[in-house]
Length: 28
Figure 1 (cartoon, rainbow, N blue to C red):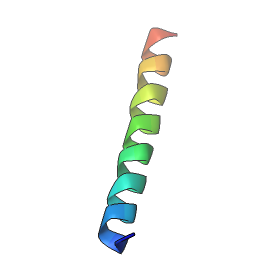
Figure 2: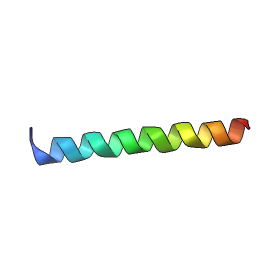
Figure 3: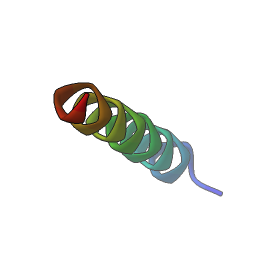
């Protein structure tokens, strides 16, 4: 697995987590 792909996938995962966390906080 290329390092670029792995790092990109990790960045997308973190972005999704941050987005979900943000939406949950705004809903509260």
